[in-house]
Length: 202
Ligand SMILES: O=P(O)(O)OC[C@H]1O[C@H](OP(=O)(O)OP(=O)(O)O)[C@H](O)[C@@H]1O
Ligand SMILES: Nc1ncnc2[nH]cnc12
Image (cartoon, rainbow, N blue to C red):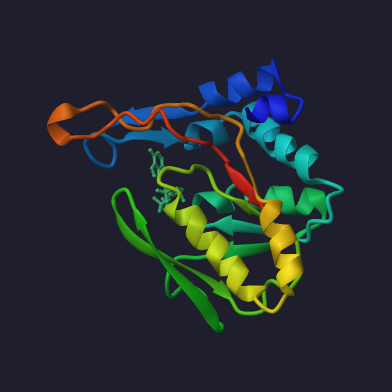
C-alpha cells in the first residue's frame, strides 16, 4: 500500500530494506517475532535509502516538527529532520527530560510505559511527523499523537478537524508477521501492522 501510494511500487529499495531487518523469534518473550533494526543500521545503503524515502515524501510539505519516539525513533528522526529543514522533538521515557513536561501513559505488548515531551516544544498549528521503527499494538504511536495534540490544543476546532482528516500512516515495510502462531500461548498471527518506520503526518 505504501509503495503504491507513494509511487514506489516495484522499488527495489523496499525489498532490500525489509531484508536488512533481522527477525529474532521469541524475543524478548515467547511468541514475539522481534524485528531488529540494528542490522539495517549496519547496512549503509539500506539505512540511507530508508531515510531518503521519508525525506522525499515529506520535504516541501511545510512540516516544521519531526517528533522521534525513544529509543528507536531517535535513530532515524534527526536525519530526516535535518534533511527536510524541521526541528527534532524527542518524545522520551519518564523522568529523562529536565524541563516542564506533559506525559501520556500507554500499554505495550510486554508491559506498560509512558512518553513525555517538553511543554512548548511544539507550537499550536505546527505540522508534525512522528517517527518510530515499528507499530505493533499502536499504543506507543497513539500516546505520541495524544502528546502532540495536547500541546497544540489551543488551535481552532476547524483547523483541528482539517488536521485530523489529514492523518496519514505510512511505512516502508509491511505485512510482516510479528507474532508466532502459538496455540498453547493463545497468540494469534495477526500478519498485521508490523511496520518499520511507520510514521504519522499530523
Ligand atoms: O506499537 P506498540 O505496541 O506500542 O510497540 C511499538 C513500540 O515498541 C518498541 O519500543 P519499546 O517500548 O520496546 O522501547 P525501546 O525503543 O526503548 O526498545 C518500538 O520501538 C516502538 O516504539
Ligand atoms: N515485534 C517487535 N519487534 C521489535 N520491536 C517491537 N516492539 C513491539 N513489538 C516489537
